[in-house]
Picture 1: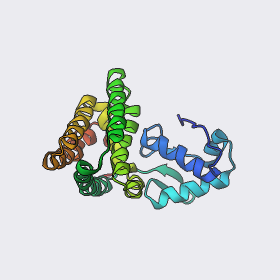
Picture 2 (picture 1 turned 90 degrees about the vertical axis):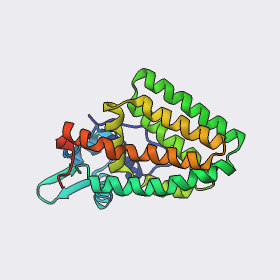
Picture 3 (picture 1 turned 180 degrees about the horizontal axis):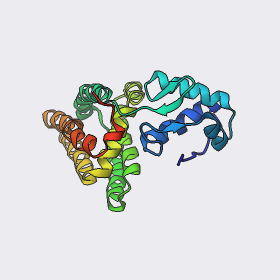
Picture 4 (picture 1 turned 60 degrees about the vertical axis):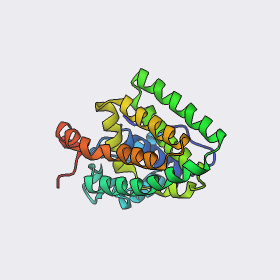
Length: 227
């Protein structure tokens, strides 16, 4: 079932459709391999077919949907090669970010990060893995912003859809507390200005998916593109 989000007054119809579709794809409301209808999406979101078609074309260029003329439009299966490329990019850049963070974070930055972690703990208690994924992303975004690298974060975020679908599966199937504990360890290392430990903690945090993906692909083979 498509989750309909509230439209911002500043959003164009195409931007709104893009945001709603990406939200639903990442949260697996629209499942890998599922057929979708331009007409149904347009009706649900209260827009014409044109912005829906434009959004789907843009998503197809990013390999998030597959458009087959005369056959239909489908949500792309999870491509583990794209997952690994996204993970590799994040790992390289985020290890550099935590080194910078050891020198650059202010007291206000630490307060914001601690508040984020408190909300993450609450999500674990409620088993709210979808909200936890959002807070996980926000934690990393706060680190980039504190180091004046917000545009770098936005670049990473634009390439994360396949990786995020594995992450949401991971949080749903695996130990949610493990993710929160990783974040706490990263933040403590930054507070201690221990660059070596901060880098090692970040690398371990972003490498878990390599070890978990086989289990997830075995449990949900219908979601994954076959090699």
